[in-house]
Image (cartoon, rainbow over all chains, first blue to last red; front, side, top):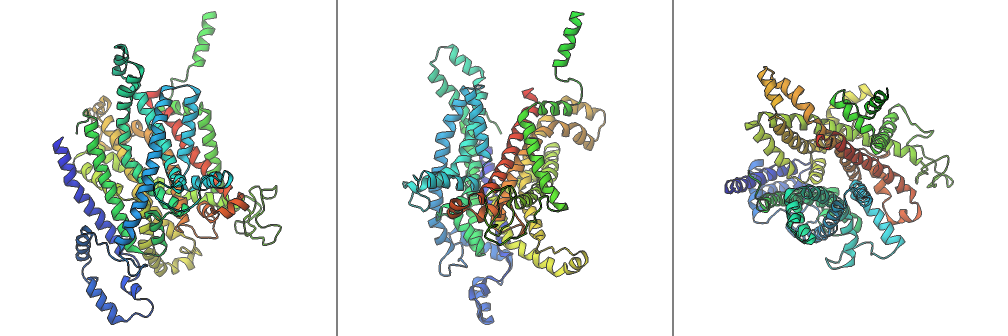
Length: 308
Length: 330
């Protein structure tokens, strides 16, 4: 086990370096010279040359990469093309917190609804309740974010008029409800189905029968024996759901006018602001890698039966 | 006599034990009404999309504009079942042409990415293990750590213009020869995006196949085949493949829905096919504002319904396939 964790920890920096290298090469392969772009229409070749030298852009691409990694480690991710006088770090750090709050709200919604619903449905297996809820969740799993967003806008915003349509006011603001719902709905559906499957798996285990046979109350059997074991496989999808949240946030944040990294990525894409896109890919990829590492190692502690 | 007829009855009621694994699975699948409905829905949509190659299936062209008050932004009617858009174009025709885009993208990226790359790399990785396995799985891990959509955006922003330049430098000969304008039709864009999408879709499939192969490889029939002197190729194609194919089919069915969804996000970003050629994604995002929702909901409702039904049908079918093909569920 210690060997496994050590191997994983040793592999992580290599993984991160490879990811940064690919991202950096892609980012620097873009059309147009960034320096000429910065200078605008009336660029002076001499000035361009001087800036290129200053920034090290005339050197070998791999030397540039090493330089980029060195400064990225200290938090310097370069300057934005579009917002002239602002660094990428400034632009991203503010927005990443907004997106993190939105993501947390969405995860909370999916966990608080999805897991209890999944256990409930599993205990009712085969009844019409089970069949109805399972088909409804499948339907909601098929709904992409760009479809749920306008639907919720029509329903809560236009017809009922009870939820605000746009804007951002932090975690404890009613404006977070609708985007969090949009992001959380696929998660609710996925968690319900997963919890149902793993609970059904646990229900047929011998230790559950033993627990009942020795006269434990139904509540204790369900919470201690069934739920605790059923939750183990669910833990592994946390890493996966992070990816879904990030992809969903591109559209959701645009729709609801939320100043997070999703809308920043789209904005940067339309204005061809490569330093920002590169930095975002880097940050999100690192988040994925670290989340997966935590999940893999945590899984090990949760389920001592797993051997690598 | 009586016992005989009873026996006959029993035989008729039983599901066919004879026939291959495939015919049995197909039989089980076709007995599920939901699966049949899904199959029919998907086939209709794909056929409608494919038929546009031979011309418009409706009396209207996809870019046939009628800029008169009577014909602009009309609700559904007999002449225009889905209504008309702000340029007086028939929405049904445009939705069908939009489906064509979806058909092309889903088929090609699933075929190249998941099926060809994913299955062959998964087979190699699971069957030979050792160094090949290590390298394939580590590379897969690298691909998995990228945020897929964001990377496709980055690729679209950086590599695509380069490829475009390259094509416009070399292609004039081809264009004057064939009369096909590669760039303005968005074919080059597609090419790059397909490449990017299939570069990412193989990992999940490869992991699934590898796990299955590792499991199946332990079976005695593989040992028997090897003892009889079967080559690696023969064992892989005739003995392992048929036994791992069912989870692969399920994953493909679910993956089709996801790919259809990401195609729409990409066309919203302006990657992929260019207006006036219709795309479901562009139709949804053009009309995704509160104003349109209030005044002409049909403009967004029909494209959204089409996409939802398609993705839902793929997911339901995947579920039904899982039940029909899963050996443990028999």
